[in-house]
Length: 106
Image 1: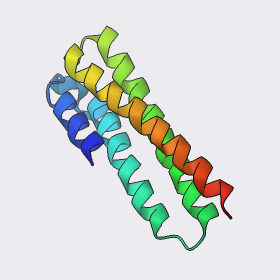
Image 2 (image 1 turned 135 degrees about the vertical axis):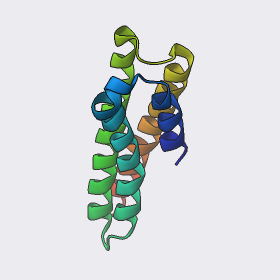
Image 3 (image 1 turned 60 degrees about the vertical axis):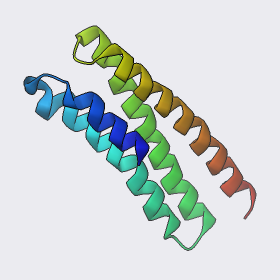
Image 4 (image 1 turned 180 degrees about the vertical axis):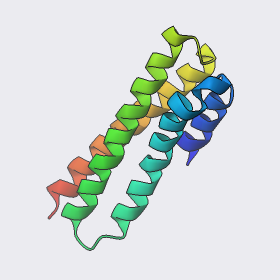
């Protein structure tokens, strides 16, 4: 949830002409991370859960790329974007570890 909160904070400062571009993409990716983890938890097998973790991981990487591209486009506050990227990196590592653990124990 914190990732989504930080993403909304970062994108709140983006220009209005990015509302349907980068803002929508970044917010959607951030919401997708938590949504896929929650949906995966409801699955009856570890394999299905791991698949949803992989999808969440893809959304984390997508969000990180979008945050990266915001800086040269000068649409984000650099310290806030750096904070968001730190969150995506931490979450990327956590999800990678989780998916490995889930797949290891059938």
